[in-house]
Amino acid sequence: MTPAIAAFLNLYRAGSSLVVPEALPAPICREAADDVVLATALAAGADAIVSGDQDLLVLRSYERIRIISPRSLLEELDGPNAPGSPRDPAHETPIIKAPR
Image 1 (cartoon, rainbow, N blue to C red):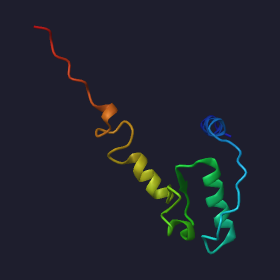
Image 2 (image 1 turned 120 degrees about the vertical axis):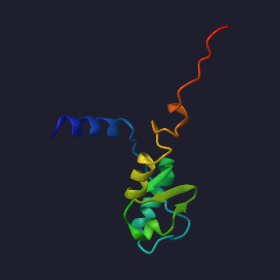
Image 3 (image 1 turned 60 degrees about the horizontal axis):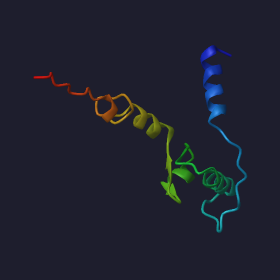
Image 4 (image 1 turned 30 degrees about the vertical axis):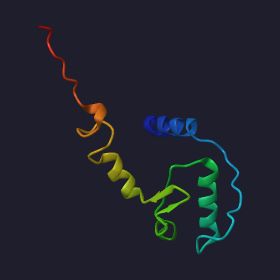
């Protein structure tokens, strides 16, 4: 394992928590396993589900949880409003006026 992978896994573990999902009130997806993904995200209070599963992606969202593809996530992270990008408000250089 490379140091970069070890660092990523440590960061991942630090931000992870174990949840026990409850069954959804009614089936949502064609496959029961996909309903478990939705229930787990709901129990975890997730903001988004990142998946390549077309049965999940077709939903686009569930209970205010966005469902996006890995490509969409990368586009958001690398896009014009990504942290550190020129359009990120935190990236703007403050204007400092000289005293008179």
